[in-house]
Image (cartoon, rainbow, N blue to C red; front, side, top):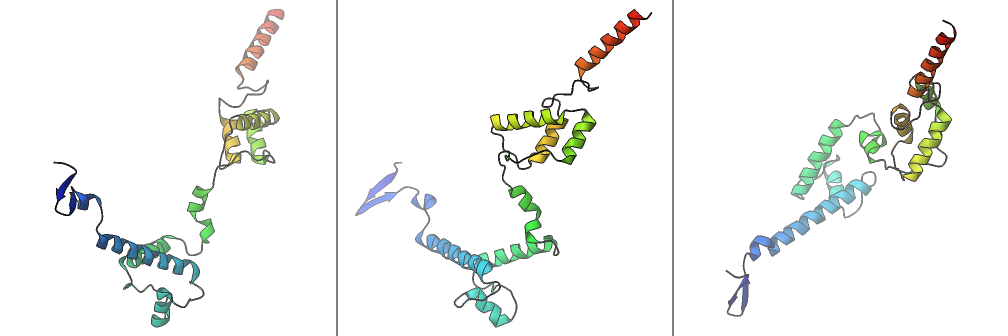
Length: 195
């Protein structure tokens, strides 16, 4: 019932094999990693210029086409199938750097010092009755004070202009409640003065 049992010449640890790999399993795992590393090296560096001593380059010379010799390891077979499936799903005329995944990999960054609103922002501000200079200043101050990071600052500013919480409406904007009350009060005073 203990963690180990004393036997002649040493101890036997309880459940050792359950929690630790055998020497054969360790050796198989190392061989699979080595084979995968060789295949990865081949795919990265030897596609255009075959290298001496690379078993995958040798299989290309032997069979006359770019296929991976599947007899090397199970991982080579799995990786080859995965690569083929991936190639089928990618558009052949689309360069690799235009792949949809690259957009997801862009890193968020702080607001660049040189960032300025573009024409689209000016149009949105005009349509919504926003003061673009004031909103740009508020947006920049907010981003710097909160140490905001965004992938697309132009999209962030478009959202800022359209949101109810961020932007302040211009004084004469029809969506500004204070302006509406002032206009209604002025209209009521005008009617009282001219019955």
